[in-house]
Image 1 (cartoon, rainbow, N blue to C red):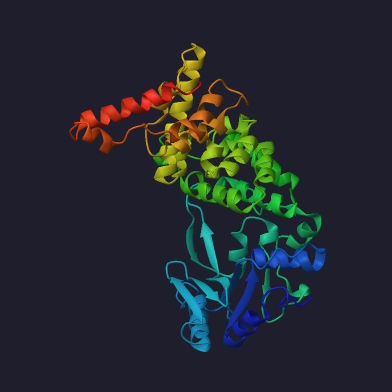
Image 2 (cartoon, rainbow, N blue to C red; image 1 turned 180 degrees about the vertical axis):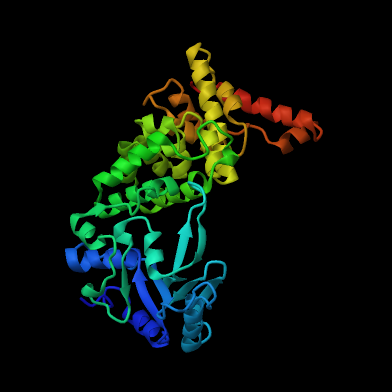
Length: 423
């Protein structure tokens, strides 16, 4: 089975030409997994993903900790061969990795490395290693295979964790008993792969997931200060969520996470939430960002957004939307909702992001017909667009002077126009 056709024949040939005799170049990761699924199991070709390539020195006597990163040396030779401008290249010296773009293909070129997690959910400590170390640090067996580029045949696949068998069984198997304790974002990756590839989480891996969540082995716990959460429960968790929502069949992936009980990684309220699918579908129709729409189902959306370190504007949007929703719920409970278009305008028009705030409150309602739905829709579609029947210039001509009085007069004129609107 020659995989070059399924990948990129020109790229493979170019890399083989510049590879020195003292290094071995391996195809690893998603490109290998998807190519094997396509060629062996007749899965549809999902397009060329980013290609992950691993480089290591063949001589076991070479200490990778002291040698020049093999990925850097290979990238330099490729640059020299292809000529200036043909290859875009960014070196990451701390990790011995290189990002390449060649003929529209993105390539991650990495020197084999070893990872160690000093504490659960923290970023791992990285040092140079061998192929076996690099495969051992990966998430699932189907991603822990390697294929030497000098021999692109099925029988040459390096498969220490039974990835080929798990591909055939269409299942995701975690590599180690503490995989999820070390990195809980692997639960989200499992849901992404399950939704995209139609795989199931292998029974012992599902048991590890559930027992890990029940024990909650991480130093940060719900209710602790948001800025103390480790990366795998904050920024890295957000990045996995963004990938899930932006590039995957999100309904299937989130359903899987909820079924596993894994939405508690975000918040217990989201794990209990039965309305997230309707909320996200309406958000897509209205052009709202999906992650804030998802988080509106949390008990404290603003706190989760702060922990995940969402962009400031999205944090502000969630904070203001949560406040407005709480205010409307309190008003409805005592029959004190505004009764005129002018009163609604005064309550809702509190900032430049007011339309998005109102839209997010509309999609966040757990009841399909809350008592504030109709006036919020009328404000969004009509009332906010109404202007005063007079202009500032007209008032100046009537004798008003520039200043607060002019603004109050315009505000009063608009309120009078809103008063004529049916509620």
